[in-house]
Length: 171
Image (cartoon, rainbow, N blue to C red; front, side, top):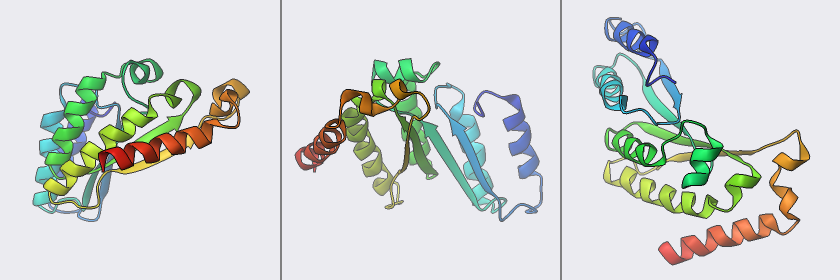
């Protein structure tokens, strides 16, 4: 967890003192964004960008669905802190991605996640980054009971319909 590990501060300090040796570096942090220590590191990353010490700073938040289900799926996740931190990162002007895995337990609150995703995308436009939050979604594989198809063949149709309905309702 890069926002908790002291090695992340060491890395950011090293980059700050690098005299631009890493000006082509794309720095990625993967996190569940559930630390109350994010702001300091985000500020360091934005300073590195402004000083052209790195090329890009990108934060990938691990999140599969929304609400208490999300906290169950991703042990250690604090959904309210994730939302607060995601908004801070977006307002700081960093690129962001949501990395999600579609599992049976995540299925039924994914529409709420997509509503939140729309909210975050609106914030990126306000922050001057009109391309929005990226999203990457995979499906659990391996054991049959880990795949969303355990709900039957209509689950994909339901999921897409629900997603489209939410988009039409919310714009």
